[in-house]
Length: 413
Image 1 (cartoon, rainbow, N blue to C red):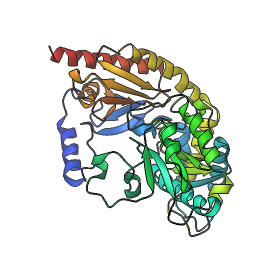
Image 2 (image 1 turned 90 degrees about the vertical axis):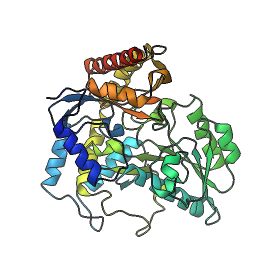
Image 3 (image 1 turned 30 degrees about the vertical axis):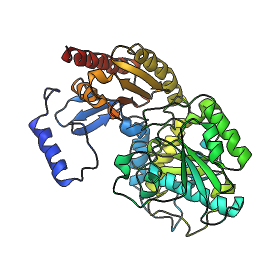
């Protein structure tokens, strides 16, 4: 093993190869992962790290989850890709189980989260033209400031992130941006051509920002009253992350469309979906939307196994109970190198005191202590461990954060 404070020659070589031959669309931490199990990752030198990123919630069920891995192995031995030109055995059970989990009628499987967002936009517009009676090409969708829904051309068209937008125009019209959590601002922007409001129940990339308690219920009421679809992007916040199956459940709210992804693939492969009722998804007809890989047999088999794990409610309960412990300990750090803590369940945004440095500088210190976490917007560290983590492992990571903050204070003299 190598000293975690340094990068071994083997890792330096692997990083150099990546940096030479791979496009620089990410800025990874200097660690080369070789394997994972549960809440742990192991690098190519044999060093182990607690994973407090979970691939942005794609690994909610833990690395190498035996149930999900076996589902993948069993399906690999049969057939993996058929395209939707034919029916496949796992597809029907998967969409039925996911629809029932969501309390909806129909499922449109895709691959990546941003494909689910793009599909939801298309469905909202189609519903607007064919059901609401909006004049063709005039539909508008209301979105939130500081949102993150992906980085396709259409999605960055309504992003505030200039890094994601710069030199990628022209942009797609038809979106109106309002402050997150402000129902009055949404109401003021709705007109006869508004077909949907697209919202993250908790904003992830923005720093795990939780809206006011009244926001989602008021938004649901407004959308119903004004005949506008409520679309909840639960790609990061859903499937157990916040202590409920869906973050919307904390407010007693059911959207018209759920956008799902990340954990739906069990940490094994990309699986996403739009889930809603027949009055919306039933508007799609053959040839109007599709994907070569969407709903493929391997994805359906793994997705079905993931849904079955969620049906027991065990992981949601773990996230809720351990989340209380996580947030209780994190709040004790406020005023001691931490300015604020936000989140729900096993999901937290921790704002670092700028005097101690950037959030990324603290993430480097965490890495040297065997914890992988990721920064966002310079000041915030996002913590999102797999839901299978133990309380002792949580404490180990929080202790590492305490030590990292102490080291940063010592460096300031």
